[in-house]
Amino acid sequence: MKRYTIAIAGTGYVGLSMAVLLAQHHKIYAVDILPEKVACINQHRSPLQDACISQYLAEKELDLTATLDAAAAYRDADFVVVAAPTNYNSDLHCFDTSAVEQVLRQILQVNRTACIVIRSTIPVGYTAEIRRKTGYPNILFSPEFLREGKALYDNLYPSRILIGADPQDPALQKAAHTFAALLQQGALKKDIPTLFMGSTEAEAVKLFANSYLALRVAYFNELDTYAESQGLNARQIIEGVCLDPRIGNYYNNPSFGYGGYCLPKDTKQLLANYGTIPEDLIRAIVNSNQTRKAFIAQRALDLAGGGTIGIFRLTMKSQSDNFRQSSIQDILHILQSKRAPLVIYEPTLPDGTSFQGVPVVNDLPAFKHMCRLILANRSDPCLNDVSDKVYTRDTFARD
Image 1 (spheres, rainbow, N blue to C red):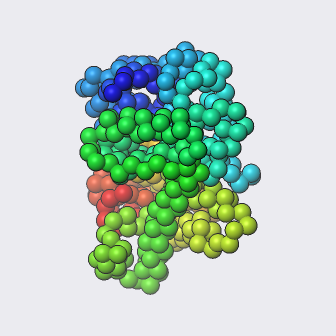
Image 2 (cartoon, rainbow, N blue to C red; image 1 turned 90 degrees about the vertical axis):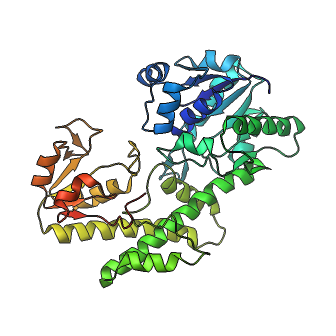
Image 3 (tube, rainbow, N blue to C red; image 1 turned 90 degrees about the horizontal axis):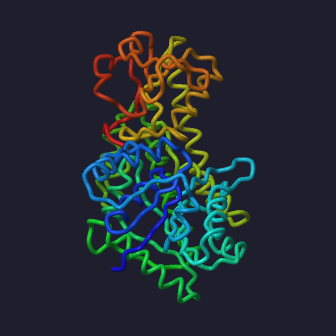
């Protein structure tokens, strides 16, 4: 295969894992606005908690340069991959795509020949709209299906590759097949299922896939709420349910609610995309998550009996250092509104500081001592000695 020059806009989990994957065989420029992240990557260290990314940066021969100079990175690129964040705007009921659009403007100011590949999650219909809006036809959409903390692994062993392109544009179809080949070349998995479809269909795949995952989380959380309220053994019920091969014994561990960067915003965006189209289920998924967090908060208040409630970790998953949109934060807000005494243990934050007005204590023995109840979305062996204080719904001790 020809050796390509590829720029990656953004070095979060999506962008950095893509940069490392492609840098095995091609020249990659990874663009970010944070000098400390750029320096870290150029020193062959990962700024993210991802074991596979850390290993590849340290051990593999990668043609990867991180840079703050976006224009220089984009100018001679054959492909530019956009991995900018798209947060959900609750006031406008849609994704905030301004970061994506800023990157697109920067690219088109210096390069009018590159194929642009959007990896950011976007509303259904966005790629077709932005092609019309910019007058630039060479834009693909290729959704990612990655887990935080295992982003590179999921690129090396992908469940599938999806490329969305205008089916009426032969040149763009050719570029879509080339980009799919780049992803296949970097992966370790062979015979990866690869689908080519319209960009709008690909955007819908992403939102419907994540909404189904959110549905599954919400289902087992509601099962767990029922079991706890009735004094039943949730684990036994879940195991009995999931032995049905049509249901499957996976993605079924109760939690304090689905959270993280993708599921909360993607379900809300899909609900917004429905508009006047009849639906009940998607709205129920969103509402169910709020109900679960309110239930957990009330249980914590009841069990603490007015004593100090400790929040053990703000992160969403046990192998992630990211706590954007983690469910425990919403529970924290509910507890604050009830004026419950609170303290947080979160090693990624400086000891002695505060998070949203709640003190951070990272001396673990001191944290344990001051808490009457410890809320842990995911259990941890370091809490075994105070198991009588720990409230968790982590039934299977896994994410």
